[in-house]
Length: 374
Image 1 (cartoon, one colour):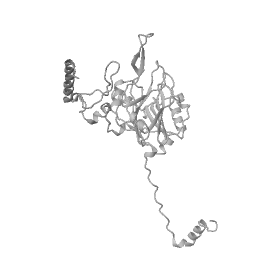
Image 2 (image 1 turned 90 degrees about the vertical axis):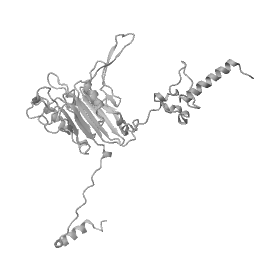
Image 3 (image 1 turned 120 degrees about the vertical axis):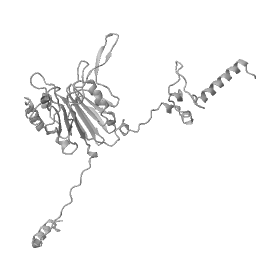
Image 4 (image 1 turned 45 degrees about the horizontal axis):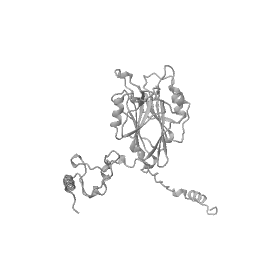
């Protein structure tokens, strides 16, 4: 049967077009395409990408499995490995705390330039409008507050209403989820707009309790009543850290006037077995113009359960304020028990028997090793 001439011309044009596409490596041989969607648009994972635009070269590895071209490359960074479960061995955790003074640029800088930090604890974060929610009933929209966003970090805030302003925040690096279970305790009795409680649990079910505090001083008195009436779990390793806006001779400079509630705060620390980790005479807040008014108000404490295990290194404080704020950073490293290598006890030195006391030594050993009692 002979085909009509117009149909033969159409078939010839189609074959010519296919050869041209194959020659330009835009349509690999034997490549199969998914059917188009309802609008006639091919599936994005099966649409060939020209080599000139960064697409992969044609070949059997792409022809047999065209969806390979839509899969992202695996990164070689060990921090990004196994983020969705806790099968990785727990490692040390670097914790940094700072008051950012509501500065957006300061927070973005910390999030972008802290690659070796695992937990970023913030007091007075930038927490303002990030979006406007509109509806038919509310065309003007309602401002929605939030924290600065960064793809490398998970942001945690206290439980709050749309009109509230959070005074504390915590960022955890996403790679931390490979080794730890991170739980924000919004149901904790200390949880408020100025206090956060975060639990960090490793694969051995050992939990680190982190309490982030910002003390907003009222016109009279203090606002630490919720903390001073709370009893900590002495069996759980705990870090208490933040901006306490409190002066006391235990950590303040000699020329600083003590706060009226400072003694009550230190007595509560003693009762709960907390130790101040701040190095002596190390400033944490700097006046923008008067150097003599600098003080020590950013503090870190640890309880006995954490210190007796030797799971913290020395607290490091920056000797100057972080750019775009007037506070220095407090940095420390937490070591899980599984990552610690304990030194073996020293070998016994033994005994040297005095020949003149032979009978006394013999009597002592016979009593200690009485064969009739064994």
